[in-house]
Length: 158
Image (spheres, rainbow, N blue to C red):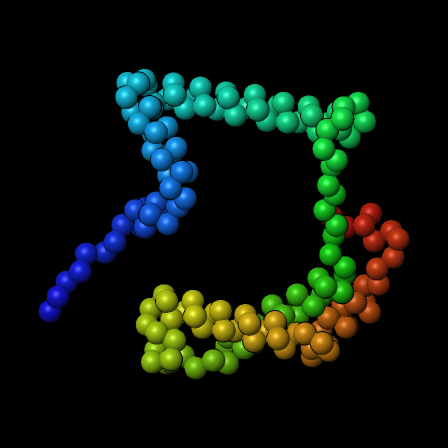
């Protein structure tokens, strides 16, 4: 029986990272390690730097919104169409139905333990999404009919 050591997850991620980014991160960590500074003091200094950057960004955004500065335009995120929200809800309900219908003792198909559970969940999610496409089973249609999207629909949310 051969026993293999479990690879270190951090090292796997580090090896998969961009080499330039990896070297930069290593240099930053080495600089912090060699400075012999108190960890709490170093963290407080870094938090102060991050807060200053965030404050500058917030100032730039407010200036851009008011038109006072020539900054990049502010991008508004559009809310999904209400029909899409209902379709996603129907897909989620169908995923739950499908997952309960899949066989419990199926280790030879999906695998054992957590990995098998993840694969089974992913299969149920994809089946639910495919079943909800097109006409689905009617959940999204009924919800859309019960809650028509009007001009004041955004004001009632919350």
